[in-house]
Length: 254
Image (tube, rainbow, N blue to C red; front, side, top):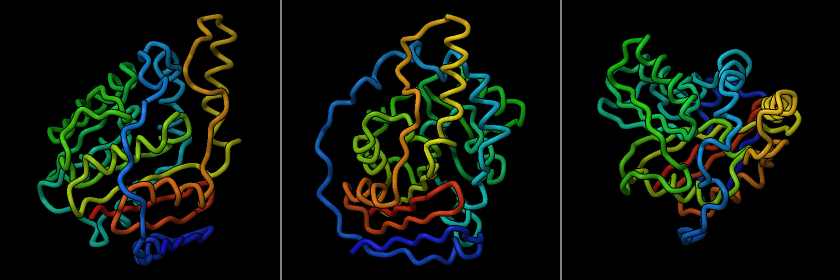
């Protein structure tokens, strides 16, 4: 039976100590069409107004690095050689941060925006990181083999994704047995929509283009919807909780 932990304000110590409950999940999700997300990256707001999203990510969004580490590695340190993938890495905030903190791991950040990836690579090079790389890829149809990664992370991924179930199926597929994923999502559509609204506003003011694939309003998950979404795959353990404006999922593969 799925158990959900929902504190409105969870300390790092409490987060690390939260029990991870067993879950009875549905069979693996069958192949689902990947919708319009497979359109080219040039029709994306995140490509044409990359600088604005980068500013939001670097200066305005919550930094969940400590929560991420406490949840994924209760002893505060990953095992040497662990392979980590970040979906929707944007400017590489978490990928570079984890690679810099833990030189013994390998980190791959993926995104579809060439502008975001260019910024991420510049950041990596400025930090002199040899254990971090970035790649263009589609989170609904990842180019990697089954059971490739030990850890998967994603932040604010589902707010603009048209096929969430397919993304979760891909998360499950590329993780190794015993692998974990950490997901951070905003709880309230108003706050989550501010970057989208601002980018759409700029697009209108500049008359640059109006055929972008992103919605004008972010789509957020309730905690129940998040539980149901991740239960579409047969994870061994699922834990969800809330903390202020954000909610989290921590899953472990069989």
